[in-house]
Image (cartoon, rainbow, N blue to C red; front, top):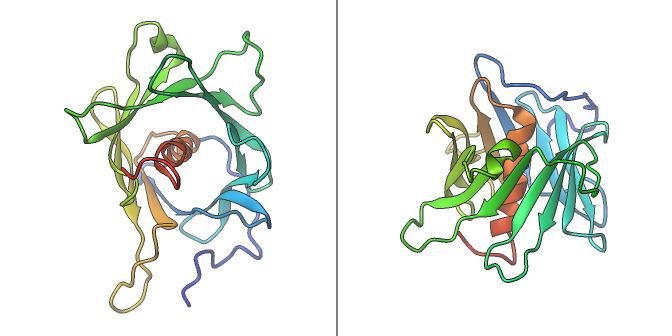
Length: 211
């Protein structure tokens, strides 16, 4: 059986918040926690080293998710914000282990796109500065259920994409939907790109819409 994480037994590197190199970055995302009784993600670089992890205990608060590095240090907090009298929930992205106090401003706000006239668009991400102007910092299109999504910035430049992953064997046998590639273009924040994956899973993962 092809290994999803070839070096997981020995890998423990700290992945600081950084932009992808001039050649970009390709990560393998596994929609599974390495810890028992947890849901989450385990993410490896092209050398099989662990770089990101999400470990949510099943009984824990599912409206708040921590994106951590390999050592378990919180990088971003993603918090769901349920709005009354609204058909669309919002998610807030905070730096580190973000606090709930109103004085702490989120880095980004994300909302699920609902428009029957535009079925390609999945979600919009707004920076906190653009929130009052309703300006869109990033737009995500495609199908998360099919693991085929493209992330665009506000200048309509592709900054990252999700693709199905195939095993490096004759015939290119595909993994299931729980294992896929996150391809990050140069100058895109790698941590933020992974946060977008978590947001898509919250919006369109198991038990949600199938888009």
